[in-house]
Image (cartoon, rainbow, N blue to C red):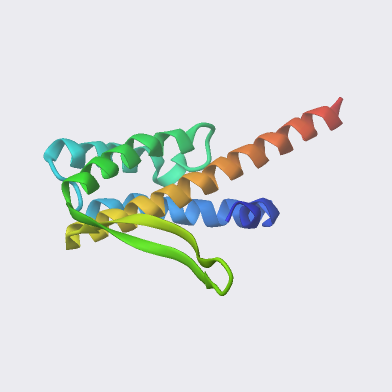
Length: 146
């Protein structure tokens, strides 16, 4: 995923990031995943801060981290158990080659929380790449202006 955003034209990356940011700020509140009124207020403040003209300013990627932490706590509350899944392949000489991964068993609400958590992590990554590339472009433009 990292290479994809690094190689994407900057204009396309910015457009995609702004679209995803706006969709996330609108959809997060209607997803009904907040566990308390305080959590809902925290999400609403974040959505208000990034929607509209709040888009690609410096440091906006850092504003997602508290929302991700909030969703991780919520996911912990929605976990009903764990099960082990083998990720790998059988090898004729060595036997099974791979690792055993511990997977969460979550409620339906937990699935929605996990989906939003993954979506916001991807959005944070897009924002970090966009911020770095925009910063580099500004630095090059300043350097060329001298």
